[in-house]
Image (tube, rainbow, N blue to C red; front, side):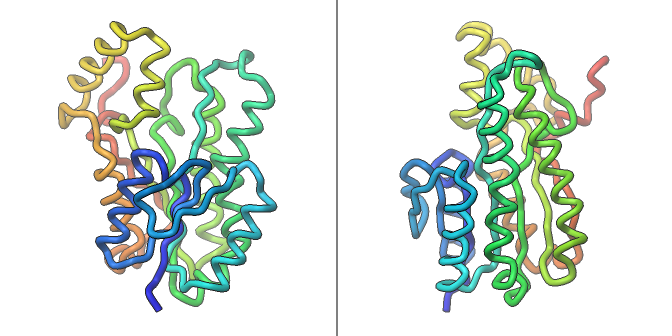
Amino acid sequence: MTSAVIVTGAAGGIGRALCERMRNEGYLSIGIDRYAASAADIDLRLDLRDSEQLAELGRELARDYDLKALVHNAAVQPIAGAGETPITEWLDALLVNVLAVEALVSATRENLASNAGSVVVVSSVHGRATTGGVTAYATTKAALEGWVRSAALDLGPDIRVNAVAPGAIDTAKLREGFARWGEESADERKAVLRQRTALHRIGKPSDVAGAVSFLIGDDADFITGAVVVVDGGATARLGSE
């Protein structure tokens, strides 16, 4: 039976790149998203805020497929600051960004363990250094990395758990984030971002997919509880420079 990889948030730019990379690596990609995920071999529609339905779906997939990995990429990003973010948006961010992976792991851990599988979550540089106006997003990404460290201990030695923390990646979510400053200001900020990034470019979704592919592969067999930063060197620069 072909090994399968579950990818949440499969409809977005990084999700599409993940599904394509998994297929190229010989895995069956199972995409979970609210929207159509055309790059997934199996496209499943589900609102990831519904933890019970998500766990039930995970149990079904664990019965039907040999799971090599679970890649939690889905995220919501409320555009609001501290004291301004509605509680409903906080809850949505917690449910999607953090608790969705917990629900899926609870349903698939035995299958993953039997296949020497792994869990990789897509975090963000915002989990450790952020900007104003995305408080719930930054907070939940920091929480997600805490989950990775703890889960690596709880699920080892049979399941490895790691994260990738992308910087600026050219996706609709990045453009949405820049849009809050207006079109002209967004272009200026993109130019500054490129200039302040060591590699002088904004990342591609395939950059993230490549790091995930490494972490679920045999060459990463002694890596767990780690966060691999994929930001072109942006966070290497001292912010006060």
